[in-house]
Each structure stands twice: as structure tokens, then as C-alpha cells.
Image (cartoon, rainbow, N blue to C red; front, side, top):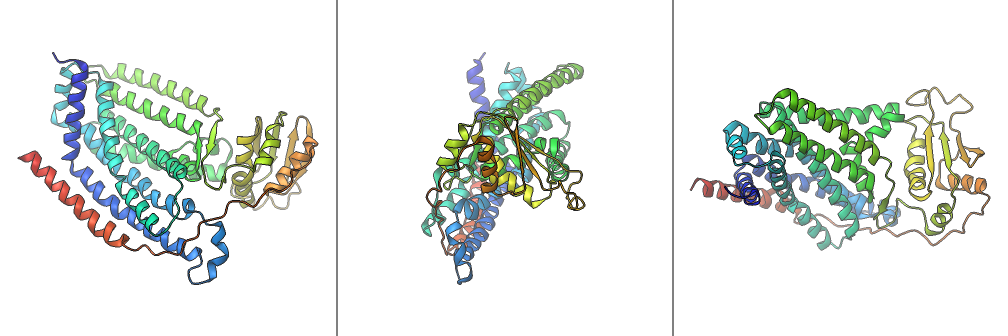
Length: 442
């Protein structure tokens, strides 16, 4: 009998051969090139206009950074591919063994179901990394135009999209193991994706607990990585979801075990995953890797705020769809949570838009409670919020520091991008796909 390690290596090689002969993977690989091309070309042209090409946008140049203008929009092609293309590749890899009968042979080799799922997920992850070649080509083109690239920001985006792909692969594996037919599994994965979008839509109107839950959906998690913010709670939550889904897939892969036992074990795994995900939401460490440090206060402000040990409670009377609430959260309160040791924020409103609350004398008020001392204000700007906190703490505001980071304007055209992504890449993928197909049949 072969050892478990040799059997696992055999399975990895077998899964890799099947991936190379999978038409769905080659189709995904061929489509990703034009998807990246569309995103990249559109982003470069918009960036050139904002950089002052033609004159009118020259005043915006100093505020332009490639992360917002080019890098993140180009990476967005992988969010589309992960949502609508990758699930079919993963389901085919998992469900193919069941429909062909190969799963029974693999189980007879004495391999653990979790090891089998791990091997398949590892190969699918490697295939997704190969699908990242177009984004590398886009980066080379951008650099050849004279564009600026900041490695930590790219690393943050790559990590976010890799975690998103891992979630999709793991969910597809669980669905393929649960469902009797691949089409049913595809519907389950699509239902989960649409469900997270609906949850985000509801959270935008209701706020509160719904908003907190929605912040951990894959689409919302990516928003933090797009800003160059690596949050440990998001990483741990993603790993929890990936691990739980892979374990579920392994549980339902055991064909000889009763349905009742597998269902009981699945409920137990889901309960453990829910507890771990809830615990992960209390993890606070995060890292601002953006070039312009957009997720952090200045050094002098951060030094003062970090020394305020009294608990701060902020009560904002603003509706979920009020633009002032968005500015307050993204520009100031999100930074406060990362800087001060004990910050609690509560939003109060009786409607989702705040349209009919404007007449209320308390709507728009922001109450600050620092160690029992209270003050109220209405300013949603960073300076207004910090001034209120400094007043409560009885400390003087720091002197203004140096000017912020300067942008990287570039009025360039996407030369060479059209033939590369629309012609060369698809033809190269089709050629390689035919080569591997014929090699397998030979």
C-alpha cells in the first residue's frame, strides 16, 4: 500500500492534469485577459483626463494616486471573474470525480477526505494564480508609460482578491459535495453571492447590526483592501469561512456515512465557524499600507489620540443614506477606531434616508462622551471631530504638520493594451489549451 504522503502527491498531480485539460478553466483564462484589458484601458484613459490631459482637470493632478485611478479598477476584473467564472471551474473539479466514479476509487486508496479536498483546493488556487498573469502584464504596461506603482498597495489588493477567490473555491467545493448535480451546486454558489449583495443592499438602508454583518461579506471585505488597509479581523474571518467550507465539503464527500450523521457534523462545524467569526470581529490590529496613508491620522495627531485612555463614545444622529454619515465614517471614525484604544460608535435614526428627519432639532447632532464628559457638535469633518475630542480631553490641538503626500498624475494613453489583451492573450490561451488537450488524448 502506498503511504498517505505519496497518495496525496499522486492526487495533486492528477488534479493538475485534469485542470490543464479542463475546458472551463481555459475558457476562464481566455476571458480574464479581455476583462482586465477593458478595466485597464478605461482606467488609464480616465486617469489621463483627471491628470490634466486637455487642460480642464489640471487642478486634480496633485490628488491623484494610481491605487484609486488605475490599480484597484484593473483588479476589479478579478472580482467579476471570481464571482461568475471561478465557481464553474471549482465545481467541475470537485463534482467531476463524483459523476465519473473516480471519487470511489480515491476513497478506496485510504485517503482522508479532508486531504483530498485540500489537494483539489491547492490546485485550484494555483490555477487562479496563473490567471493573474494579465494583471502582471497590465502593471508592466503601466510602468512602461511612466506610471508609479507602490508595492505594499499592490500586495494589499492581491491579498484581498486571493482571499476572495479562496472563499469562492471553498464554497464551490462545499456546494459540489452537497449537491447531486453540478448545475445544482452552481445555483447554490450563485445564490450565496446574490444573497451577500442583498445583505449589503439591506444594510445600506437599515444600518446598525445589518451594516456590521454586511461588512464581512466578500464584496465589502474587498473595500478595505482596495484602500490599502489590511485588517486582521477580515483576514481571520475569511480563513474561518474558507476552512469551514472545506471541512463541510470533506464531510459530505464520505459516501458511506449516513446523511443524518453528516448533517449533524455539518451543524456542529457551522456553529464553531460562527463562534470563531464572531470572535474575529473583536480583533483590532490593522495595517495602513497605502502610499498616502489615507487610513491614518498624521503622526502628531495619532501620537496625541493614542495617549487618551478614557473610553470614547460617539453617538451620531445621521441616517444610513445621509452623505454626511459616509464622510464621517470613512474620513474620521474609521481612523479613530485604529488609533484610540477604546472607541464605540452608535448611529441613531428613525429612517433610512433621513429625509423626513431634517426638521428635528436633534438630527445631525454628534454627541461625544469621553470618560463621562459630554459635548455635542454637528461638524462631520475630521478637524471638527478632532477639535471636539481635544476639548473633552483638555488638551491643545497639535500644530499643523507638513503638507500631505503629493499625487502621481500621468496623462498617458494605453498604447499596446488593445492588441495585447484582446488579441494576443486570447490566441495564446487558445493555442495552449489545444496543445494540452491534444497532449492528453495522445
